[in-house]
Length: 365
Ligand SMILES: Cc1ncc(COP(=O)(O)O)c(C=O)c1O
Image 1: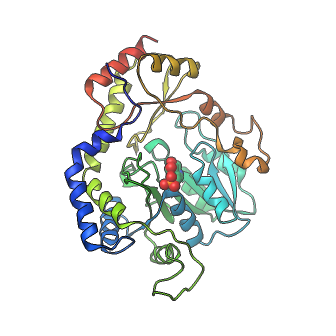
Image 2 (image 1 turned 90 degrees about the vertical axis):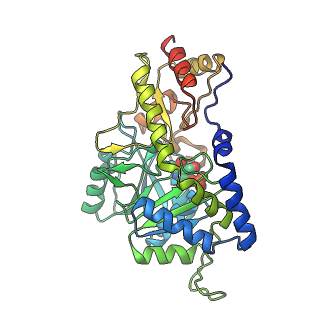
Image 3 (image 1 turned 30 degrees about the vertical axis):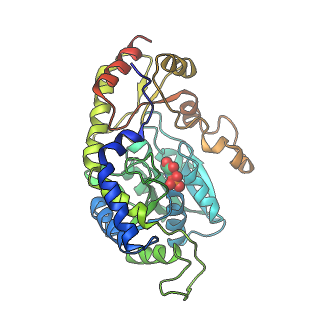
């Protein structure tokens, strides 16, 4: 058996190469490279995929959160509750607009933002909650939305890892004032470079995101407010339109792979993420916990199986946030996960023979 990578994007590229080359040729012929009709086309297609009113393409998923927060009126010194068990971009976006991220713990079984801890962390300065649909699985939307409503807090969904996931049958991105997506190449829907989007059912938020991504301007050289250059490239939008047509099929295959892992790996040393019945996960990542994580990772590597860690240091203990004064022990579930998590290979093009080999190797550990 050759080395099985944690992720191999080239297998997918080979399958859709002709479609991608055709799409890029059309962009070069039209010669509009930033915003323009290819971007508008993708925005319409993505809004329809998420069953939302508006999708606004931006340059990456971090910008999407910055623009969502700013468009919804979050200001300097406002506290925004974010999960510690996430990629740092969720918190960093809050910091970029001068806000203060307040980290909360995850639950012990779903590993998602804990409603109980959110309640404990609300102060008079709290203005928003960002929930992250982590690893492709929706967080406890009902629990978090109830707290947001009772405390008059803005709810933003970070959907960077969850294109196509649903909660009670409804697509993520529909539950908060805005939802944000990353199309970083490794995502379930990934660009060939950087890209992201904000989705919303609110006309005003959509208009403001459009304005802010383009230097605060709708009409050329007329600037209503100070904005950013956070525009999406036409080439990336064209590639994303090609890939969006395949996304349901790819997500279906990810779920098949997850079901195979769950059904075939029978090693009591491993614990998998608990997925509640009303959550339809698109398995961006397949994460397990195991006591001897580093030993297990070496063992997989010796048997030519790649793996990942998502995430090895929880956000509240990152050096970047040392000024906020958190210490070890503050958010025990997130800290446990950081020390014991391991992500198995997960991408739609994994072969059945590879999956069987992975399960066999793990069962012998
Ligand atoms: C949960 C989460 N939020 C935000 C981001 C930021 O997206 P980007 O890397 O496109 O800026 C990512 C992806 O990297 C992510 O996984």
